[in-house]
Length: 117
Image 1 (cartoon, rainbow, N blue to C red):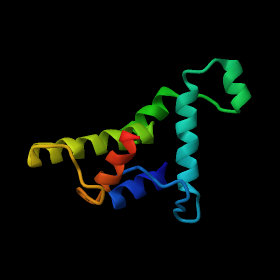
Image 2: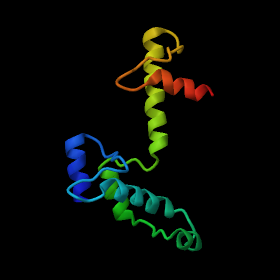
Image 3: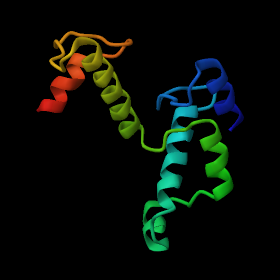
C-alpha cells in the first residue's frame, strides 16, 4: 500500500500499469489483484473459492478509494474519453473528430472511430 501511495504522489494518479515495478515490487500486478479482490465482494463464497479470490474488507476499500483507485479501469477510461469528446463538441460545434486528432494528449479520433465500429 505504501508503494501505491508513493506512486500516486509522484505520478498524480493511482492507475498503475500492470507491468510496473516499484522498488523491486510488482506494484501493477498487486493493484490488479486488489481489483480482483474488490470484485470478489459481490461473489458467492463458492465463486470466490473457484477463482481463488478473497474478498476485500471495507477498510481496505476505503484506503484504496482515498487514493482514487479506479476499480473498473476500462469504464474510467471510457468516461474520460467521452468527456474529451464533449469538450471537442462544445468547442468545435460538432462531434466529427478527425481520425488523427489528439485531445489533451489522448487519441480522441482513434477512440471515436473504435466506438463507431
